[in-house]
Amino acid sequence: MLTQVDKNNSKDRPETLNKICHVDFHIEEIQPGKKDKLGNDIMQVLWYGSNYIVYKSGYGVCVHFSNDKDIEKAQRDALTIISPELCELRYLTSQMRGDGLSLYDFNIAQSIMLLLENKTDDAVRIAKAALDLAVIRTTADNTIRYVRSCMQVASVLIVAVIVSAIIAHNAVPDNLKRGIEFFSTNSHVYYSVAAIFGVLGAVFSILTRIQDFKMKPCQQSYLNDLMAGLRVGIGLIGGAMLYLIIEKTSVGKAIFSEEFLRSWRCAALLGFLGGYVERLVQTVFQRTGNAIEDSFGTPVQKARDNKSA
Image (tube, rainbow, N blue to C red; front, side, top):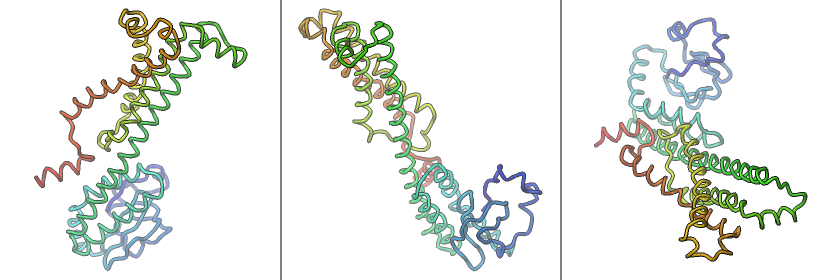
């Protein structure tokens, strides 16, 4: 199986890729510590067949076919049965970190071995199962990255609001006691409190629905980080706006006492509620997305499903 050429090592290769691919390279030359036909370092031999070798290189699991040209052609033709799954598995595993990667390496090697040993059904089942598990793993990683982005944006916004409030009121407290008095007596700071708790409400809303996020590989995009920041930003604005509306209108005065309205407790409560309702925006996006998106993790999964339908 041909693999991507290592661009970083291209200077060390005297021949072009076209020439390398047509040079006779015998199966006996596949040994750990040496280079394969494309010049990639051979890390480990995973399976010795009677007329092929499955091995691990820097670009994943590969196979070197038989020295006999006719057998090699038949082996290449057979490998096309599971090559779509293998290509996507190689990509997904390259995005992973940790010990779990070796499991998929052996799954790929197992599928290749079974296919070349004429156990096609078993090879297809293992390749599809490995791809499904890799999609689940990648989806979980994408979800964690999304939540991490939300937390990072929330931290930055909270610090920015606190610093802005202190600068705006020109009241940098000399000690903790003066700081507490400042945030307890200055009514203008209540909007900052509402904004901060709006951010916390948005983060809480996201965390309570973390299991609903299904960011599969085909949905992974740098725009997800932008969306994470947008949702937290909506919480900040929503918290401050809700407190403003309640405090300055007769509706708020009819519900709460004047003393409670001008307290940090009211600002925190209304700010948190204003931030929590950012999920309404997510609901709109989700309804729109459900109308145009499928639940498949990769193009191969969708293609296989359409073929079996």
